[in-house]
Length: 136
Image (cartoon, rainbow, N blue to C red; front, side):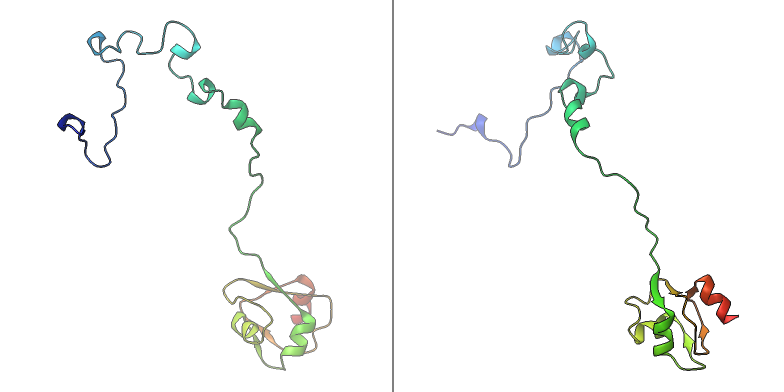
């Protein structure tokens, strides 16, 4: 049968044990740490005390570095020759419209050792040194 002293608030949790508040509290003097030794001193990590140090050492860590910088989308000179005519402007938006790149917000770079046969101007697109020499 339920009695009044057993009724608790919904979600009620027991308060944590406050130690080191004098001998009258029942947890004074050594504050439930026992007498001397490493575990009785301050600054000893709980992981070491609980024997989890080896477990931490054995778990695989994520190695390396992943850059937040977007990679260049590669476009070949051959594709530029096929998709553009003389006098047109090669930009990120026109490359996206013609299906040569997938994202107009990520940088693009024109690569290739082929000869650039069309006379186009490049706007906001990176060029490899071989292509840049042909454009000059």
